[in-house]
Length: 287
Ligand code: PPS
Image (cartoon, rainbow, N blue to C red; front, top):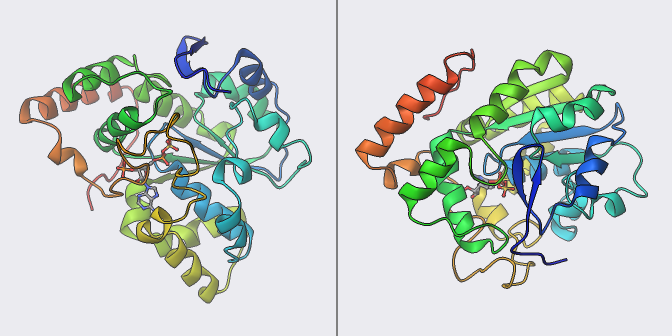
C-alpha cells in the first residue's frame, strides 16, 4: 500500500491515507479490547516509540530478542493502521496496542474493557519541532512549508492527526473511565529507571533490579537509535526519505529553543494559556 498523496478525512480529522483507510478506522472503532491488553495512547511525536520499546522489554522479562528482531509496528501495532487486523489475527490477548486516535474515536470500544491505558504526553513545543522535521522525511505527510507556517497549522489543529490541544484535553478529562496512567516524555528523560519502575507497578509486572538495569540500558536514545526494528530504516526511501532526516533525530528536551523565535514562543504560550484554561492539566516540561 503506498497512497502517499492520499488524505483520509475521518471524524473531522485528517490522517495519512498511506496507513489509514475507512475500513481500518471502523476496525479500530469496533475493536474488542481485552482486560489483558495494554494500550499506548499518544499524539504523534510524544514518545510513542520509546514507550513501545519499554513495554516490549518489560513484557519479555528483560529479553531483548523481540525488540531486536520484530519491527515495532508488528509487536506493538497501531490499531488504526490498515495492517493491524492481520497482525492481531492470531494474538487474542496480552497485546500491546498503540494508537494516535483521539478519545472520541476510540473511547466506545476501549471503554468496554478494563485494558490498561498509558497516555504519554510531551511539551507541545518540542512536539512541533519533532513533527516538523518528520514531515520533511515522511513522504506520506504534506510538505510542512516553513517552520512558521507549520507552527500556524499546528496551532489551528490543521495538521494530520488533528489538534494536540483537543487530543490531550479529551483523553485526560476522561481518564477516570479507564485503568489509566499518565506519564510524560520529560519524566522518562529525567529518570528512566524510576519511570520503568512506575510502569512495572502499573502493569503489575514486578521485575528484578538487574532486569530493570537492562531495560534502562536498552531504552536509552543511543541504543535505540541503532535498532533497525524501531528507527524506521527498514522503510524504503520512497516512503521515508532517510536523506532528509532521521526518525530518531535528537531525543532531547527543549529543542524548541533552537527553532522558535521569541515572537513565536510568546504567541504559542498565549495560545496555550487560552486553549488550556479550561483544563487542570499540569506538566513539568523542563528538566
Ligand atoms: S511517532 O512518529 O508518533 O511514532 O513518533 P514518537 O515515537 O512519538 O516520537 C519520536 C520522538 O521521540 C524521540 N525518541 C526518544 N527520545 C529520547 N530517548 C529515546 N529512547 C527515544 N526514542 C524516541 C525521537 O528521537 C523523536 O524526537 P525528536 O525530538 O524528533 O528527536
